[in-house]
Image 1 (tube, rainbow, N blue to C red):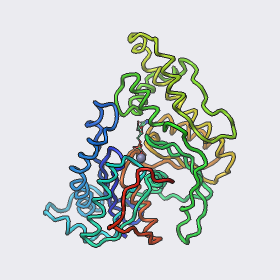
Image 2 (cartoon, rainbow, N blue to C red):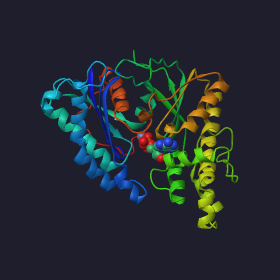
Image 3 (cartoon, rainbow, N blue to C red):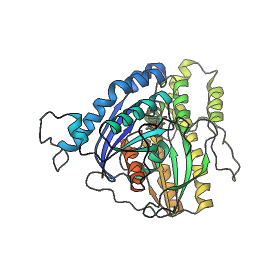
Image 4 (cartoon, rainbow, N blue to C red):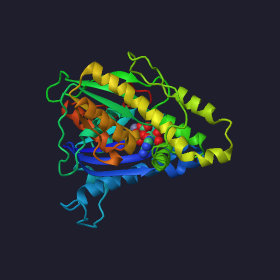
Length: 367
Ligand code: KG4
Ligand code: ZN
């Protein structure tokens, strides 16, 4: 089954082509340059950029899916072909319905519906958070990595918009064991990525903050404990997160520091905040593993691009003597359409079609 997947929930315009669970091509047009001067994503700028880029991004993904040599690199033809030509080989269109930025989601959903109507294709509507979870199961064009999730499994998904611990159990549908999800813990306020972005802004480091904080924290090395920050929701029975208090406490710690003092300690300030966010993530995930006794643990989302967090998660898995899966490629952690196509494949196998005449975005779509 050939799936064309579309993702526009925030500030990346993405399209991918999959053959079942294998990614044949994947295109991400990042808008970071457009938003960074504003210190965050500006919805209207995102919408206009998605509108300008969505069709070229889709066209590039479709072209690449057909013009790669068996080695996956060399184009075999330079012939010009139309969108209509490429759409002939597509069976299903998968699109992110939500959650996300309303007017950004709208561009992807509208485009997907128009294509489905014009070229008479089946349409499936995907939850972005499920996309992040199943990003762990996306394979390359050669079918690698081969991964089996033994259920029950538990997944920590950490991005700029979400921080959730999700339990995966056997569902009722034949052949699709992954569709029973239960959120067992989640942030009550800011997402972890959002907290990193806000701390970076406070330190004058620009947007997005996660990658800059990571670079500085690497320079600081073991110098990551300049001062104590609170341990939010310390009660061991609570599996939820809270990051806004951490951010406020960080703000008050350095409020009266001079610019020189902040600059001199920039790397260890970044490392101190990052360490505290990551230890919070690990602490609750550790408790959730003890409570639900999963056979597999997984993690995903934009913040998983961070090497320190990956290291801490691998150490936790060793401690628990469990297998841990994390997305196989760094680009699979941050927003992409390949993960949307992977969920789309599950929905298509179950024939959970959406009507392109009525499908609408849902910025607050629950999980
Ligand atoms: O998954 P994602 O691309 O979009 C959402 O669904 O939110 O995640 C974006 C978030 C941002 O908060 C960004 O700062 C964070 O992921 N991020 C990182 C790193 N790369 C991206 N955080 C820490 N370290 C990184 N290397
Ligand atoms: Zn995301």
